[in-house]
Image (tube, rainbow, N blue to C red; front, side):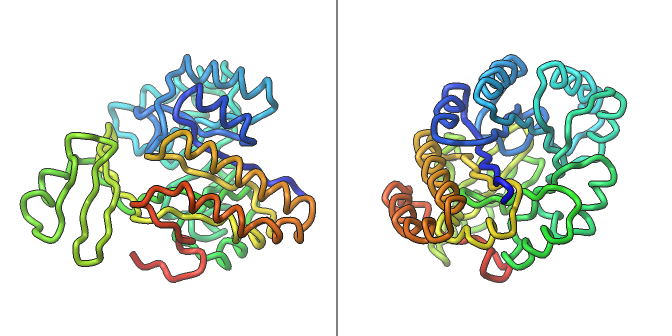
Length: 309
């Protein structure tokens, strides 16, 4: 049976080391200039150190270049990719076709992982990007489990699926917080706008709090719940999904480390036998419930329901 990769987003180099010990197989890092919604900022020097550590432990290191690039940034893509080639990273996550062109001009051979967040919804499109250089497709969070399995059965590229953490519901390249919700919509209020990592959009009608922050790439609003699939991994592992992702954005690093160790136990138990996994999955879920932040209830995302926000 093919081994499924456990992919995690570290907050910094120290956290990456902790995640290696916790059992992560691969890491996605980067910096805001090139990548979107990162758990931490990794400069080229940080990436160099991270690659050395991952190589020592036989782990993979991927770099996020999944921003939507304007003209003022495109000239920076080629030299950045050449630096990544020198460092020896294992993959680049992209959404903008400019990255494909830059990779060709840079004459580098780093594998590409196609990730547009919301448009990776069928195997035709995944294979389209596969023919243009991508070796992996990161599927949209809005797909059901049945749809994911169908894509995997027909895709000619690797398939990555998020199984834990926040999901982005909305992004604008503008700073929207004060421009609309704070002054015009009486139903919604912005809380803690001055503290970038502790802002929430209140939906009083539904009693929801949506995490929100602004960075170099604009405004991002996240789901009110955390996706958690630790007790529902059977079909994903049966389908031999290539990579299962834990997204640590806006979470405390210690939380992400614990979550990683629990998913490591779940995957290892399944690889030993399906019955071993079934015996422990409820207990693993309870352990996550015990450390889950009160404002972040757990659910199974859109794996078992319609795509309705």
